[in-house]
Length: 405
Ligand SMILES: Cc1ncc(COP(=O)(O)O)c(C=O)c1O
Ligand SMILES: Nc1c(O)cccc1C(=O)C[C@H](N)C(=O)O
Image (tube, rainbow, N blue to C red; front, top):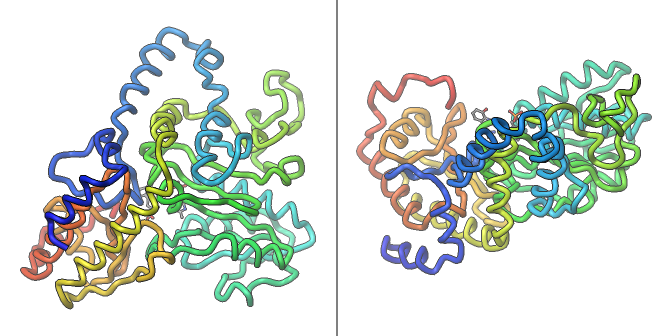
């Protein structure tokens, strides 16, 4: 495909107008929306209003009049359509790791006679670390079993399974409905991590028991924006929040001596929301109300497939595709292996192509269809070719490791 053909695809793109709603530095091809999404231009205005009007003028009255107190469920209702959930099924707050803890503890309690939690050694480390900490805290002989082959890992001793729908390294995508059915057939609780799914394509929580994720990647909620937790309606009366803070109480302002859970998903709220982060997220969610998620998926498949084709058209440059070739099996990310992945990525970033690197040799490129153009993909592939063909990455500046890769 030529650059002109890419420009024609951009002109016909039904999502093209959304790009103007994001702040993107000139000359930057941002392929890291799978780590931190771009900033909606409405976010600074929203935050400024929250600070200069709501905080400055209303002070403590803001909890009522600006609905700060309702943020956990208001934002939850904003996330719900992105994951195929309904109102009253999602609560927003805390960080992803904390939400994983709450969900897995609640899942284990729903199956009190079982002592195994199935985790995935290839999942993002915090998911595994949190399960390790939870199992230590639970006592009572709990064990963690690596998923390996799911069919083999499942047995009548498995209380809960935690998996990511999309693999953070390869972008490989699991069939949520099929896996959930398999886990339920074994009598276990299914918990999905949707960090790399939400906002990348239409998600359907379906029969899942719990689902969670961050909002700072494809949702574009901003650095450190709060996480979300979906609790299936059938569990809302019985599921327990081990972090039983006052925001999950039935009547926080009754100041009762003991915890009494709220009805519904609100019982999974813990404490005072990070209001300004929630406000930034609300700016992104306003935009999502106007987005057709099926158009997002169609463009994501087109962008990722085009990227693979253009990069591979340059011949063997030491790159090996690490993502599934079949678009049905991947999320909105493409990864390549390269033995000198770190300096290669640094050289690309220096030339405006922002992907990221995951040790020991993975180059990751995320494709956020709301703000990426086909010409960006063409330009990125051309620059990757130049960096590799001319070995521009062989520069000692690119060898120095930064704290965050
Ligand atoms: C699958 C997955 N889970 C969790 C996290 C992050 O957890 P937290 O928001 O608590 O830092 C990430 C990325 O940072 C992730 O990719
Ligand atoms: N959450 C991050 C952070 O606090 C610092 C740097 C990167 C991140 C990320 O989101 C990384 C991302 N989850 C990943 O897939 O690697």
